[in-house]
Amino acid sequence: MTALPDAIDDMQTVDELANSAGISVRTTRYYASLGLLPPPTRRGRVAYYGAEHAARLSLVRALQAHGFTMAAIEKAMSRIPNDATVEDIAVQRAVLTSWSPGGPEVLDRQQLDVRAGRELAADEVALLVETGVLEQIGRTYSPLPGFEMGVELLDVEIPVDGITEAGKAIDRHMRALRDDLNDILNRQVLEPYRSMPRTEEQSARLELTIQRLRALTLQAVVSGFERATNAAITRS
Image (tube, rainbow, N blue to C red; front, side):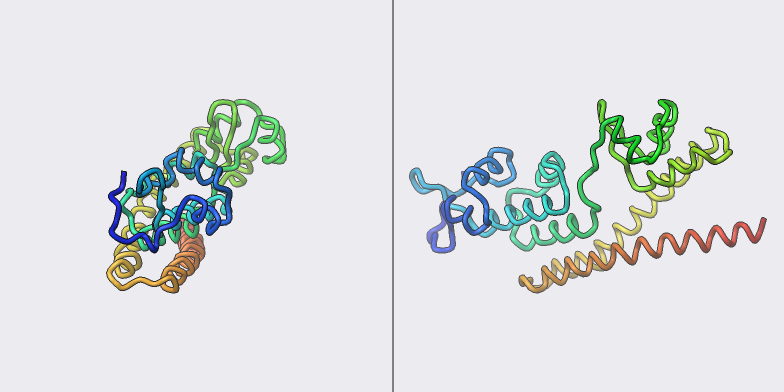
């Protein structure tokens, strides 16, 4: 239980919190039961919620709007410590909603064929999973970035081992690139933001900045790979 501050003028009851977030009290309590909100401050039987609780509710709604499943939201929120400030949560929102493509697309076996635009054999599905463009969870499937390319590769006359090896090589280098870009993002964007007095306007600017960075980074990666491929073909 959070300790009660001397003044609660800036605190809200659960009814007020729900009303300011535009959701029902029942939904607010449900989110709290999932651990999406830290424990409230209590005075007797009355629970009070602060700006941090409101920021978390806003983040939950933003993630839902970006297509995140509730399971994905729970996972993301569990990584935010209970003592995170409103500014800390704003950083999380900027990263999660701007850098992430959204929640996973979950398909059954028949829907997967429709998504692929063709009927996939069992061994083809297994190959798509192995090459990292399709995730299988029980009897459901989630297409990952590169899924369409993976389906097209199934019709290319190249040995299965070659496709698998190429997929592993791409994944290996993409992981290394991801780590480098993540380090640059933290040092050059997030750390300077954390060190300055933060306002709501600055939080909005950070979110817009990361949105633009995401688009520019994807474009730069594609352009860089095209240049490298052209150079390799020229040498060959």
